[in-house]
Length: 286
Image 1 (cartoon, rainbow, N blue to C red):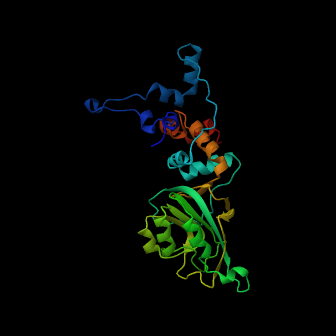
Image 2: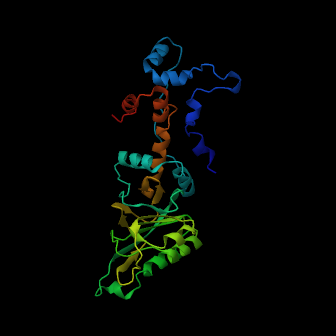
Image 3: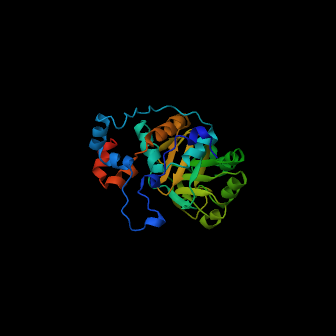
């Protein structure tokens, strides 16, 4: 569970803003709460302020939250990748991976963890790395993994051989990892399902990487899905895709998310008014 300091500022669930009907009064007309009416009609709200019937609300300034990595992971479980992508864009970083990368294995599970990385390349017989197994750095990096890690593979979009499969998945599960992301192909999909890992990839290919891929390096900065990834970055995956939150930005991202979660959030405003355009204008998106 998360510390109280993180939970106290979480938004009310949207159901709290919906008109409620009790079982004893079925069929009666229920008025929305004053808060919802004021959110839907700012002019009315201003009139009430002028009459002294309600007080001014002082905006809350965004402050940087201080949280441990495990607390950040817990908070990231609550945030959709689409929301994370928007927040990161507002902070000047494009964190959403290429749309080609989709969840191929166990898509019903949200994936949140810290990145460990490896890099592959097209096989070249004369390259110094050709003497190594195509999985050389893969198993080395898995041996160094910690519970909750996510393996991110820079396969340079190579789709003619698999960069991740059953044996690597079993090793990852044994180390307590939660998933893998590859901008190339994977294989052994049926066997990977039984590991419980969430595996994202650009596709599936039945061939191994032997004599097709080179193993170059591990736990170094890479690019995957056209996004820079460094060891220790936070990797989040769901039905919409994969987003990378740089470790140096994680505290600011969490703080920005909390600051945006006002009582009158976009979803609540749209439900109260039915006016999507007004919501976009009110929340600075139009």
